[in-house]
Length: 311
Image (cartoon, rainbow, N blue to C red):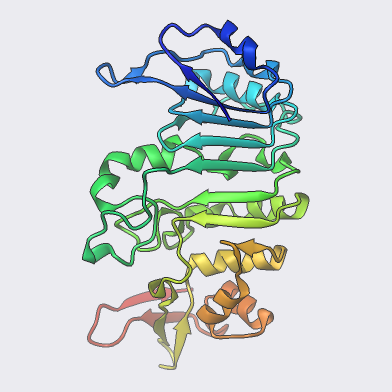
């Protein structure tokens, strides 16, 4: 991949030597004394000059709100673009203006975020060793806003529902010391599950072969923990299956049987729900295991913290 450093005195005429490239990497140089890029683009129309470009990688890019519409308009106008990559130090804010509905990257197969220096288990103290997510406790307070709001997940891209040639879906689960499952899978209407209909639509329309969620270890025993609940009326106990990780995977698996984190996810669904039949698994995922006749129930054993729920 041809790397092009965007330095202080950069002139766009320098692109002329590489307009026939199929892969380029634009690396924006940061002046750490000033805390900003030494050169940036307000107009990204030069992208359309790369008529053969299939892979575009941006390092340390900074797309502000005022330039975002221009950036996405020109990014989506690249006729042969197959893969778009950014590194985790980039900032890409989404446009406020709606793009034309017929404007989208027609051949895009994959969007990837490179977390080169973020070890999945780095800097986790004993208290957080079973927590999921990219990044660790020691650095998250400085990176939370950046990682969760300033670099977009694929499902947040404008007109994403039109991306008909996708082959790989990548999502990124950031370490969250308030949720052991990471920021994508906080309980009760998680970020990932809020977008599940978009993901399912992409699975139905595109030639997607696999889904990857980086920062989620499906072998982590803690994410398989379930709670006991009790019907307040009858006193009968039942198992509560409320993990939004496995609820999401169940909906995905019922939409299209593809690889999930490089494996057949059915074995993980069987492990969590304790059932071998997909219909039984699906029913538990939809109902969280709460029997139909139960109206009010209590979660937690006697002598511990108990929480009462109404349906």
